[in-house]
Length: 497
Image (cartoon, rainbow, N blue to C red; front, side):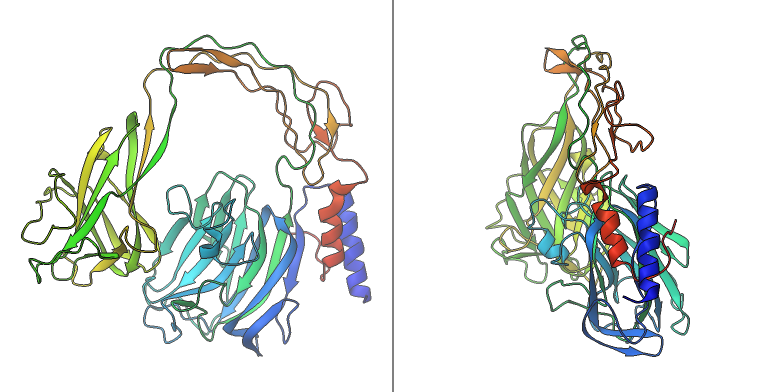
């Protein structure tokens, strides 16, 4: 071990023993003629590593709060850029799982975390940012995605830019360009990001790949790994008294309904039927998509969205209510189609192949019943979506709802429990929980939460009465991340805020 690395390890170990809250350097790779990651293709040039190809790193443990940054040069994300060799290009990615693909993640149980930066000819001269703590499930509950359009020439390929990303334990993740915030996605759940990919991720080949000729340098990852509620926490407090009964109850939920009939009509073939087609086409010469759903078991509707997965890029279209629910997908044609309402419920701009989108149809869904919709578009560059006959995601209607009535009055807080030892990988323990309210009608009042000492409290002592908290021990598995980070460090820098 060189003196520099030994000094770094000692410095990191000292920082680790000083307290768990410090954000430490997890990885630093200048990409100057070589890499400590795993390289698959590309080449080293003056200034860094150049795509096409891929470099990956395993951080060893997930970073639950922290960030990463990398410098890029010779980067031209303009829509007309000759660097666009693929419809979708993944230039920077992080994943919880080693498979490194949002598409593989969609089959994982539980769903895995990731963020992507995508470029491509349809991303309006900059890039699209995607992030998720639940795999590639469609919005609104799964991934968040934001296009960041800019004017042509916004990025000068002759300059070097820093792309950076930071995430919090609260589930907020922010993308920045040269320190200036571009977009923040709030997920409400902790990220666990362990594997880094530049050049491209491991998405299925074909429409995906690296943006050619981009040069990457000075990769850095920093942060901590404090997974909430890991290991054994302190004992909980005693239950509080139950709340008084409420009338009705405010319980509700979200229900997903698969499409029961879907087809499309084509004015250029006015008597043709398409009920068995694996795709649904809209726009171009006036093609129209028809969808029907049956809703049951819901209360008062608060939100309703039709989810679709694009199999062809282009104008996404406008969605309309259709009063006639008696149409048959096997016989519907352009001449026999029902007439859509003239009013537009919601619209989509340009859609991309393989991505999922949602139309807001809340005003049309009033409760249980049968509902039909039509999607129209005046765009010459039409688009298409997967039908229920395809191998992709079939159309869905996602309805959020609530029942009537107010909940019961909250119970009083539980008293504090005794302190406990720290968990194997975390710093948090759950305090006492309040008692549940007595049931009446269809709902029950829930008690207030008991005293919660889940946050780190290094100053407290193990076994202290009345705090309901966990505290770190001076030895044991609670230090495993700090020690691994110390041994694996290759730079002198020990902290980054």
